[in-house]
Amino acid sequence: MKAAVPLQALLLLILLPCLAGVAQASVSVSAYVAVGEVSVQIELAGLNATIYDLARTHAGAFNETTVPEAIRAYLADKGLEGIYYRDASMSFNDTAKSISISFTLAGKGLMDFRYNKTDMSRIYELRADWRKVDVPVRDGGELLFKINFSSYFSKPLQEWEEGECEVAPGDVRPCLSLNSTVEDRLFNTSSWAFWRFILPKGAELLWAKGDTLSFRMPPEPLDLFIASPFWPFLA
Image (cartoon, rainbow, N blue to C red):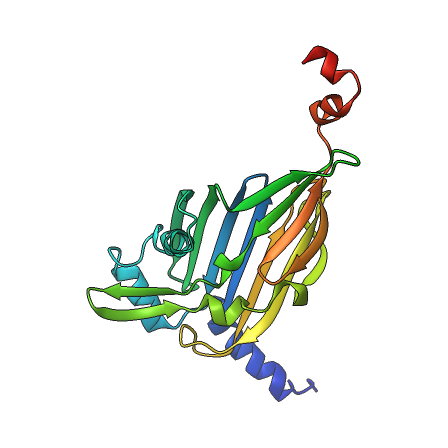
């Protein structure tokens, strides 16, 4: 006599084909910090079908420059007119109802730099308030939808988690991350919001507070040479 299939297992077998193409509702951001710039990768997954279709069919209102331009304009309003973006791109996945956006932020004012005079290491301070810039998407005067980064990632950086991220096999770097659950009309259900700042290889995270994080980079050979007693005689 064959054993009866449990009801839960039967339901799972029925639902699996339906769930195979469904992405978890999430907003995921990886910000790769380098000296003088930050490369940002954003993934909006499992979007509400109506919102996704609006984004897909309004290229004039929502394209690869929409998010980085909102950030640039915000920083310009703060007096940082030298900040710019490059390498902006965007792609759609119709099956998963997801949107991938990437760009690189750079320019004067994004990151401050000084030497540690004791060991000539380099100390950097990254301005990170731009993570909270909301992005309204309008077609003429009509608001189509809004990406509410401020509601996802507004926690002050001292409340984020310090740790390590493996960005490639054997390439482990210090990172600062925030993981939370949010409610947003972009999605049909509660969504997962995740942001991580990934520091350069060899960096040491010193502190994070408010909207600023600081990290140290080892001294370059030229930095050590300039600090040596021989430099004044060669300069």
